[in-house]
Length: 72
Image (cartoon, rainbow, N blue to C red; front, side, top):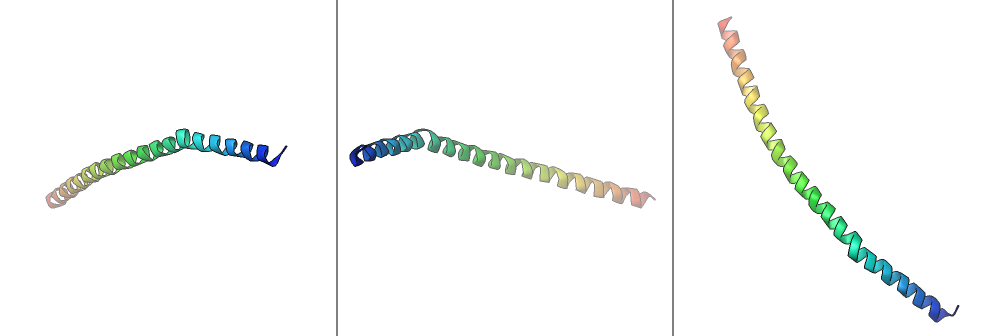
């Protein structure tokens, strides 16, 4: 094959790879990142809610323990 044919084939190959990457791969990567960010934000709100519940439970346990110790 001549050099021109090889370069043309290489150009077509690179263009098709570029088109596939821009059309399919990059949007999927961005969508995955959006889902990760959304999941992380949901997890942090759940964590703060659970943290508050645990703190309230610990306060209740401490109060009950103090009452129990004072009675005995």
